[in-house]
Amino acid sequence: CASLAEWVIAMDMYAKISKEVEPKRKRVAAAEADLRSVTEQLKKKQLQLQQVESKIKELQESYDHQVAEKKKLEISIMQTQSRLKRASKLT
Image (tube, rainbow, N blue to C red):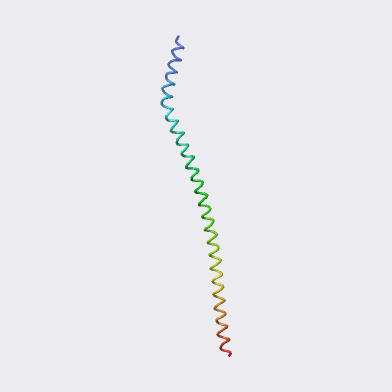
């Protein structure tokens, strides 16, 4: 009879603890679901950022190339103008 009483007490204790723990488990599960959702959004945003940074790098390289080309053309213009001045002095 004593072991039956111990079993009943243990089951009662388990029921009380279970009532306290279950809402906490649900909150943890909800928090983990939120975390997964936010982590997924973070990954998407990081991918978008990586794509934007890649495009910026591509545009910067294109800009640098165009600036270098402009400088070459300016030098060529100056040289051509100088030649024209010298040629006009010859005639």
